Image: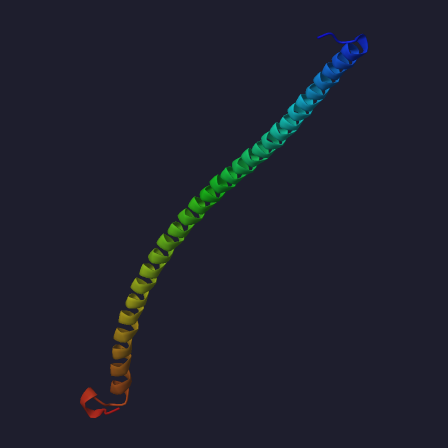
Amino acid sequence: MCFSSSEAVCSSHYVLVSFRLESEITQTQDLTEDDDWEKENSTTVEREGTLQDLEEEIARLERKNETLGHGIRELQKKLTRKSQKATKCEQGHLKGPLEDSKVNEKAILSGFGLHNQETSF
């Protein structure tokens, strides 16, 4: 079968247009894939940055928590020591005034010429 020259030109023009269209479609798909890849990559980079920021914040909070825990333990030790000292001091003061009050009672009673047996408070 023979084609006329105009048919051959039309046919080759059709092939050329078809090739160009396929090429443009492929380029568009490649650009779309590139855009998608760039968006995914950008999202991944942002997420990695956010994750790193969170990890740094967690580490900072853990250090702060440890410091606060240490401070609390030290304050508890100080309070325990002060409480023990206060208890010893109170016990010492209770003994002293109690004994002093007995001596004072005897002196007062003897000053009035009374003895312990004669008083009934």
